[in-house]
Image 1 (cartoon, rainbow, N blue to C red):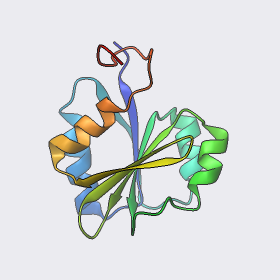
Image 2 (tube, rainbow, N blue to C red):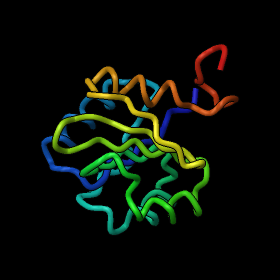
Image 3 (cartoon, rainbow, N blue to C red):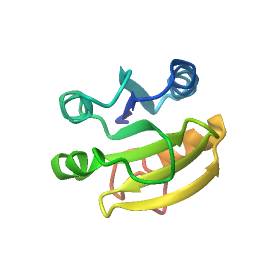
Image 4 (cartoon, helix red, strand yellow):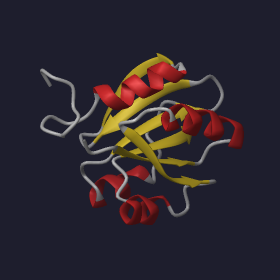
Length: 127
């Protein structure tokens, strides 16, 4: 089974450590990189072949730098985690925002799994 490749970027170190720790326990996911900010987001996402980018965000808006990311990597999914209250939002190419409310460690993992595109190895049955 192909593992979901996750890049974590632009969030406080403690939040980054928590998220990477949660993802590291999942056999179908792997952390392929950690960036302290989003300056090299596009090149890192491309170079590392990330399927999902988990970003620290300040509010519910799609960060401006994600437009170039979606242009270069249309299949990438962006999971934004608000650094102030822990709520999360998922964007895909359209771009669309799906409110996930306050996210728990298990909620974070399920958000990544649930939003796999159809036909991707490891996707849940019935998708």
